[in-house]
Length: 287
Image (cartoon, rainbow, N blue to C red; front, side, top):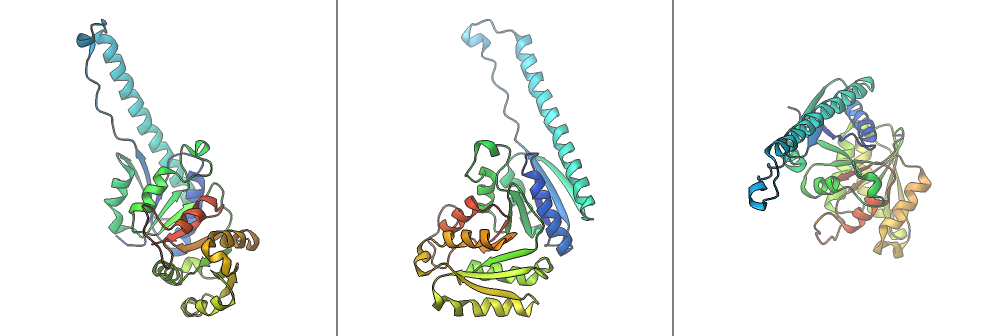
């Protein structure tokens, strides 16, 4: 199994379409195989028969009907899950992806991904999922869990996508930013795109972009170095970065998960969290 395999997590929500868009882009540009994953919740244990204990005359027939209803719901969920995977497979094939496998699993999403993480190179997941309308302004719980636990790069799909022509790479000199630059340099997907290499600060920050610019140039990527914001923005660099993304028309953002002088949190760096919540474009997050 090649380690450039992409796993795409779909749940049938409105974010599944953008997940497939980003998966098709990454797979065709990098000549990578794709695993489609749809995970159903684990089965709940049967409820105990309390009719005798509470003496309310609950009938065995009624309890049996409730049990059968649970079974019917489980079968329907399986049928729906297979249909979602079939539709997703067809969409990827039409987009030019040739190597696709589909997985329908039951249980915990995180455990399912962790069990095969060593065989994967990238996770693509929606910013939110089935509860998107109730989670405006927040990150989805499954997205947060995946980002928090996985060591793999994670590509976040927003509600809407567009053709990828311009990429912004955020640089702060930290280890995860360096790994993000290395990843861009190694993958064919980013060659031929208009590329901005940005850092936040005053004029003195310009020289910090020399090293990543050389790495990208050696890979055939002509990145334009840009210092955005001011020295005052260093305390809240997400503001300057979000302004740049909007003004530049970037189609995807690549960034490290942690800042240069981060204090580890339960999830990721605070600047990164703010970007993920506010960004309306795909974000590739590299740990």
